[in-house]
Structure formats: structure tokens, C-alpha cells
Length: 313
Image (cartoon, rainbow, N blue to C red; front, side, top):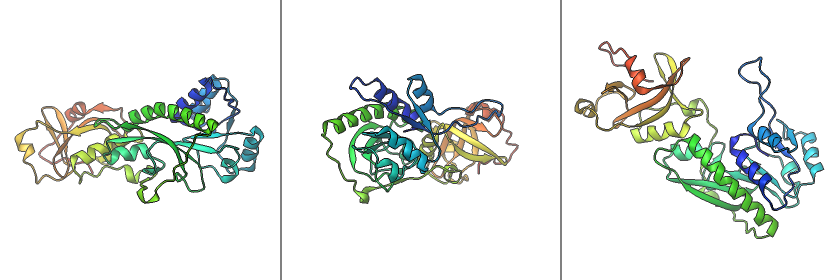
């Protein structure tokens, strides 16, 4: 059971495994309309992969419906594998004889919630990973089966890290299935006192706060790139920021500008800079509302300061 690209490598790994697993059913979300209303609805990445592999697919947006539980029960599953799907009710996750497990994009109990990869980068973590755990009633709290770690590079963004974790996770899922079949799982209870949250990304919590240190703003931007993207406003319009870095080698006049208001813009040697609470951040790629994405230098060439201080807000 899964929907986005994150789940596809695990599906392919199970389908390609020569250990004799029978994939009785692939469950995913329903086709969604595209932006162009005249186009046919778009299947989920998991559905596309399943059809390519010749696997049976069941689509649902209502995992609590009796029809869905009946469909899963008809398969008489030994195991259900969940990767980036909806929160399942007990009527479904208790059906398999050997349990239902989930692939989660963090080292649990850290970052329980909808956006673990994003928040790990936003918070400046240097490592993360994936965890498989048995589902229970409370979300992301079940007993841990196994996990794999990976470092977070200083310039990794959420999109790149998500791809890497999906590939790592495919191996974790395969190992988990082997452990379950061989009866070697030793479930590890999560320590709730060490739990941290990874709440759903919203318009409110993805807005850039320039009144923070430049490194933290840099982490915030890369933790939301490329989707949904950190945003700010400029000239009364929304502006997304995809790439940035703490500025180095800047003009001494700018370096000493401690009284400049956070969010203020400057151009130095063609580079677009914005003031944070402790220094300057260089903006590398951004997208104004209604425009295509552009490099910071191109954006800077279009600015007209006219003796006034330009600011993001």
C-alpha cells in the first residue's frame, strides 16, 4: 500500500525478489485530475509502476470503508507492506496473519508524522534513515523491526534526500520481509520520551523567517526544496526560494551592516543577498509568483533600488 514516488522502489524490489513472494494486491490512491482539465486524470506513481509490472491494483481514497476492508480480507494476506500511504484502521492492519508494517522516513522515534525528511533537514540534523515498524493504533508508535541510516550532507535538499531514502528503504523492506518469514524479528519498543514531531507542511509553517541565523534559514530552505518550497513575499507577491547558501567573501561595508533590518536585499558582485539576523544569505534559485524559476543573479539584475531599502517580508 502506497501512493507517491517514495513507495515505488520498495514495490519494485518486492516484485523482483526471487524468494517466492506473491503480490496479491497493490493498493494506492485514486487517479487525480491534472491541472489541465481537458486531460485525463493522472494515476499515482505506485499505480503506474504496478501496471507496468502487471500487478493487480485497487484504488481508494477511503481506507475506512467496509468495501476496502472486505477487498483486503479477500486477499487473505500474510503481510501488508505500507509505504507513504494513509493511516489504516485496525479493521485493515490487523487482517494479515503475520502483521502489517510501515516504512517510515526517519530513525524512529525521531520525527513521527507526515514530513520526517523535511524536518530533519530543517532542524540541521547530520544523519537520518528509514525504519520499519509494526502498525498499531497510534501513528508511528509501533514496535521497530529494523532500520538503516544515512548521513545528511550540508547541501542535501529534501527532494534529493527523499529519493535516496526511498532506494535505501527498498532494501530495508526486503530485509524486513525476510525477517518476518524466517521468524527472526525481535520487536523493539519505541522510547516515547525520545519522540519528536514532524508535522504536516502548511502554508503557515513553510514561510521564511528572516529573523533567524543565516545557517538556520539555509537549512529551512533546503529542507523544503524543491516541494513545497520555502516562501516569502516581495512587492506584495509570493516568492519561492529553492536554493541558497550563507554568503562569504562579501564587501566589507555589507559585512559590517549589523543594523540592517533582516529581510533587506543587497547586490554584491552580481550576487543577490538577503540579510538574516546574524549575516547575509546568498539566494541562488528563486521563483516569483506567475514567473518561471530563475537564478539569483538574474533576479538581481531586475531590481531597482532607487535609494530605498528593498525587503522581503
